[in-house]
Structure formats: C-alpha cells, structure tokens
Image (tube, helix red, strand yellow):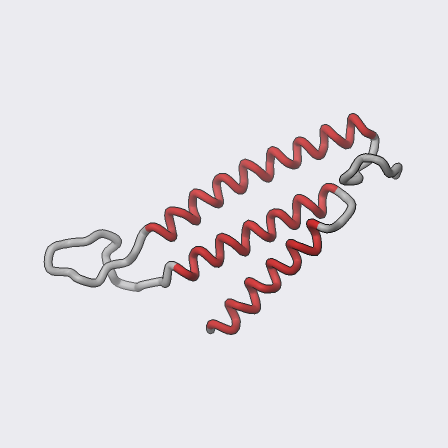
Length: 109
C-alpha cells in the first residue's frame, strides 16, 4: 500500500511540475492544481486513518483519531479552489489584454 501511495504522489508531483514548466497559462494552472492535490493527499496519508475511534479525547479512552489532518486538508481544498478560480480569471484577463496566452506575454498565437 505504501508503494502505491508513493507512486501516486510521485506521479501527481511529476505531472504538476511538468505542467508548471509549460509556456501556456492553462497548463500552468493545471500543474498548480495537480501539485495541490499531491500535497493534500500527502497530508491526509500522513495523518494515518484510524477506523472506529472517536475524534475527541473521552474519559477512559486512550486511543483516538487525530482530526487535525482532515481539518488541514479541508481548509487546503477550499483555499486551493479559491486560488485556482482567481488564477483562471487572472489568466483570462491577461489573454484579453495581451492577445495571447503565453506565460511571459511576448509570443503571438
């Protein structure tokens, strides 16, 4: 299972880095999204899933689930969605203003 998770995380990270290095804006946005997915998955996996345990400490129970990784990932998903929407609007505005979708804005279509 650890090897499968490592392969998935590596693939998401490699695809994200590859797409970030592209010259067009949409692949860059997609690459940032893949990297955020990789980080979210990494945080969730590092939190270790525990089944059948309460998420809070109760009297007499010494083993409990840690709710912090789930809270961090949920927050990261919301912030990542907002930032992706903002970057897409920014890229569309740059396309309209510059007339192309190249990252540095110097190449013509």
